[in-house]
Image 1 (tube, rainbow, N blue to C red):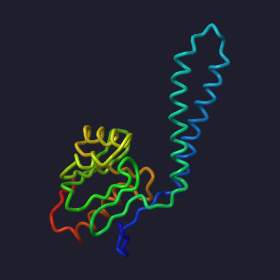
Image 2 (image 1 turned 90 degrees about the vertical axis):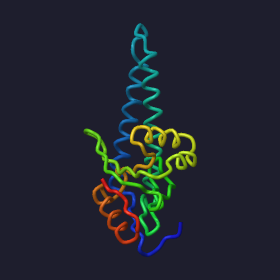
Image 3 (image 1 turned 180 degrees about the horizontal axis):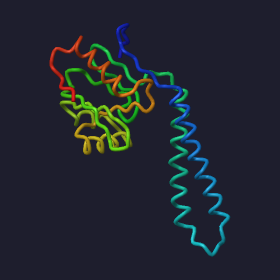
Image 4 (image 1 turned 30 degrees about the horizontal axis):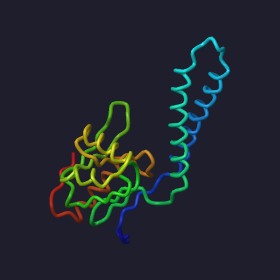
Length: 184
C-alpha cells in the first residue's frame, strides 16, 4: 500500500506497550515462581494438576511476553486511514486492508467490564477468512461467530482510544466515501 501525505496514521503507543509488557512479564515470573514452589512441595501431594496448569500458564505468558517485546520494538503504524480505506496492522487482522466500498457498517462494541472494540462489518467476510492462516484464521472465525464480522479493532496497543479512532474514520469517510456507511 502506498502512503500518501493525507493518510491518518495511528501508531503503537510506547507507554502502553511498556506497561503491558511489564504486566505480562510479571505474570510470567509469577507462574514460574509458583511452578518452582509446587516442585518443592511434599511428595505426598498430587502435583500433576497444578504442574499441568502452571505449565500451560507459563507457556502462554512466555509467548505473550515475547509478542509484547516484539511489539515494543515495532515502529510500524498500528492503523492507517486513507482515501481508499483502512489498513490494520494490529491484532488478528494484521495486514488487512479494508476498502471503503467493502464496508457496510461500523459499530462500537463494549463488553461488560471489558475492552471496547470497533467492529467493521464487511460485505464478504468469507473472503477475509479465506485469506487468514493458522491461529489468526481461528481467531477471526471466533470473532465472526460472536460479533457477525471477522474485522475488529481494539485500541489496547494504539496511541488513540476507540472514540478518537471512530471520529477520525467518520471524518475521513465524510471527505472521501460517496456511499453511506452506517455508523452505530
